[in-house]
Image (cartoon, rainbow, N blue to C red; front, side, top):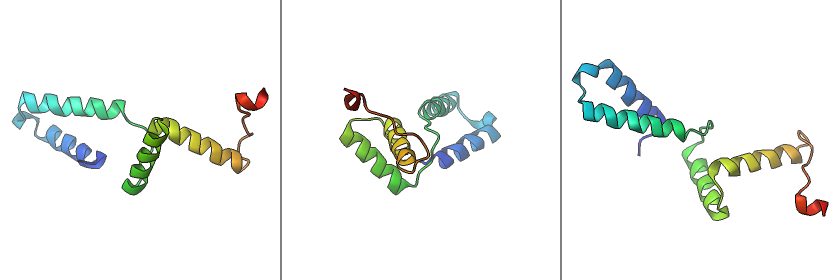
Amino acid sequence: MSTRIDFADELEDAANRIADISRADLQIMLRRAALRLRNTEGIVLDQEIDDAVYALAADLRMTKQDLLRTMIREWLEKGSYLPVMADEEDEA
């Protein structure tokens, strides 16, 4: 599995030798680029941490993005950087 940096280097190399790349290879690279852009989450984590977050997200049946939002919100609330949000169940 290539990293984002590896893929960026591959795209840059292709741009530098565009006349030598077949149309099919270029289409594949562009489709991969589009897919990666759609799935970009904005946070680059160490591989070990990324694997743990994905595993926890799968266990909780959440997306990685939703899990990270929840983790960050709870951390900020516990550190008093954000007001604590009351759960709907707590209000009843």
